Length: 198
Ligand SMILES: Nc1ncnc2c1ncn2[C@@H]1O[C@H](COP(=O)(O)OS(=O)(=O)O)[C@@H](OP(=O)(O)O)[C@H]1O
Ligand SMILES: Nc1ncnc2c1ncn2[C@@H]1O[C@H](COP(=O)(O)OP(=O)(O)O)[C@@H](O)[C@H]1O
Image (cartoon, rainbow, N blue to C red; front, side, top):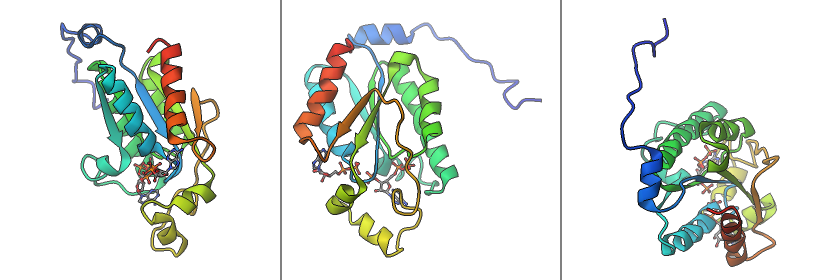
């Protein structure tokens, strides 16, 4: 017997469409993926400020922040990362249903885990942004000193050093943070959203 057999979905009268109409805009997920130090949080922070200034309701879900709360029980094994991304995917879907634009900033190194999130929402509600930056540049930045610790073995399973990162094959947007300024990367995302009517 399925454990879900006795769980019945309740349909409420106020729907995503009602909430979107109240907000006056579409809701969707901007999914930032990339190495530690590639610029996910920096860019998402500025994109959110630009959207907020236009009257768009937003929320940032960030790896470090969520791992101090909802996901405090998870580490960095492949299975724990999968569960991390699964939970964030479910949360992101709830945000989309509530009419809010989600900016999710997670390394999310496994292509299949990202694909699973994509499948949870409609095609145009998931915008994958590959925050592309060579590991050498990320390591040079090392904003939290984590690469240094990973190189001397103080942190294990560190993405790009002792754990894999699978590059997105077909992301909606690629920003190259070692080639372009922060402002240029932010503008590239804003331009995409304007072109897509978001
Ligand atoms: N082993 C290891 N590998 C990668 N990252 C590590 C690790 N240990 C701690 N950290 C810190 O955790 C942040 C990444 O968390 P995420 O939830 O985004 O990771 S994942 O998507 O589940 O792979 C990551 O944040 P960012 O630097 O902002 O990417 C690090 O600060
Ligand atoms: N073009 C750029 N885009 C994003 N970040 C940049 C860029 N150029 C330099 N940086 C710097 O790189 C660092 C990126 O750190 P962070 O945003 O925390 O990365 P992540 O969230 O991916 O770990 C910041 O110190 C930021 O100022």
